[in-house]
Image 1 (tube, rainbow, N blue to C red):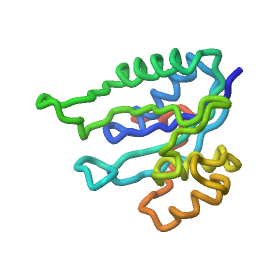
Image 2: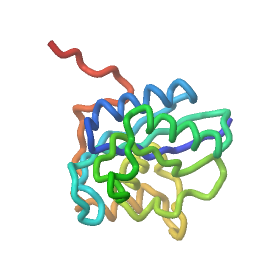
Image 3: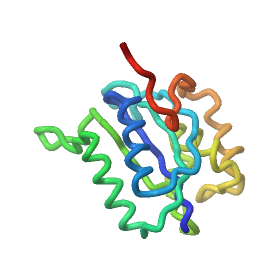
Length: 165
């Protein structure tokens, strides 16, 4: 069964959408591990609310293409709007799910480019070597030690959300 590493992100009702995404992913695959959730600003100075980001390790019988199609359906089920009324990329992201590593395929080229991808993934795949790098991810992720990522230890993706009164 293929091992797959996913990157998750949300900046709209973020904790609830990340949890919903993990629950829905769990319906199509075996969730094996989840990273810490991190808060980060939008990439590239884009406008919008801060993001919550995390990484998952899953096992699945789905092909890469079938898994990608299922992930798009999960994003849509969580209210993903890809373009605003003017056709611009939406700054509100209810859920973004990306395949970073699918089994023995080469990892996603942006793996070591962004702190919000590299740091969470380094927690659950420390020995993975990103494309264009000679060192494992646990070392590469140290480049982002001074980034604006904030660990959100109050959010556990593998536990149900707290009850509210």
